[in-house]
Length: 212
Image 1 (cartoon, rainbow, N blue to C red):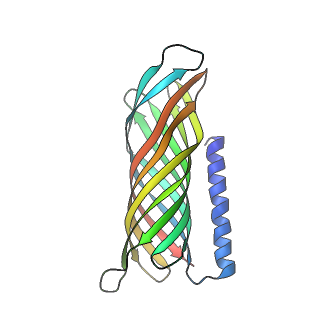
Image 2 (image 1 turned 45 degrees about the horizontal axis):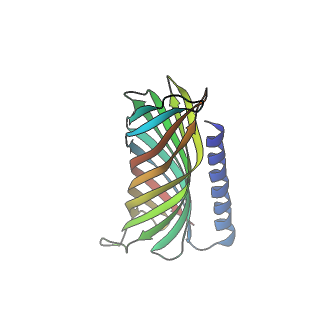
């Protein structure tokens, strides 16, 4: 894990711990929740430009990906039974294939707005939801031939849709689909090279949330 990756992870973990402590101390009767999730990610292949900053000819590079994985945690607050806001840390990793070998990793801290529909089914346990998030992310590309390229502080956004099933008053499990995108930026590499690249992926996730 790079220095930027450690910074993103530490910031998210500290915020989650603070949020959990506030929920316990203030006792808002189920308004706060903690969530964990994981699943598969399918990054989109894209054309990129490899540049030599000292001058010379730029090279077009095609990045293609195998299926990767996603892991994440979030702390949220439900303002109403239908509307919530959450702070999330997510990590994505996928291996490169084809013209470039290696892998790409993305750490992101996102703020998500979630809208939950009214409960469905005989006991109202099923609750579809959708939402969107914005935040900051880094991209860390490890190439077997050209070394490491990375950039932090890039703008990221995501679209969210899923359905939750309430197991108990405190525990909910969920299935979810997402579209995640990090804006293109200049990824700094070794020996004066840089790579202009972004990151986009479609994710299928499973998760669980515990309400306070």
